[in-house]
Length: 60
Image (cartoon, rainbow, N blue to C red; front, side, top):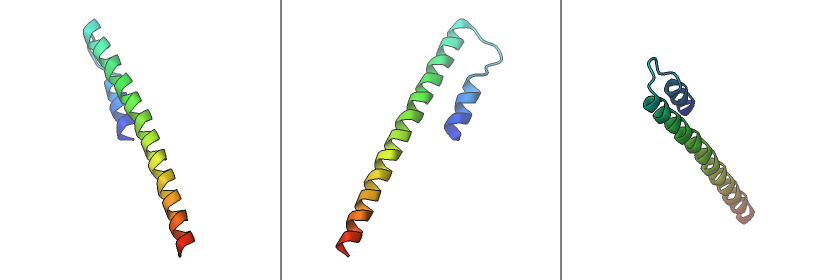
């Protein structure tokens, strides 16, 4: 949610110059990529934790 809020804030500058607009778009793209990367990391960690839990249950 925080990344989404930050993305929304950066998309609404009150006074835009061309340079500001370009920087804002770059920042928004970076935030979107970070969001995608974090989702991937979260999914990988969750998958690994699930695998470890399953493996430990087999041992007990």
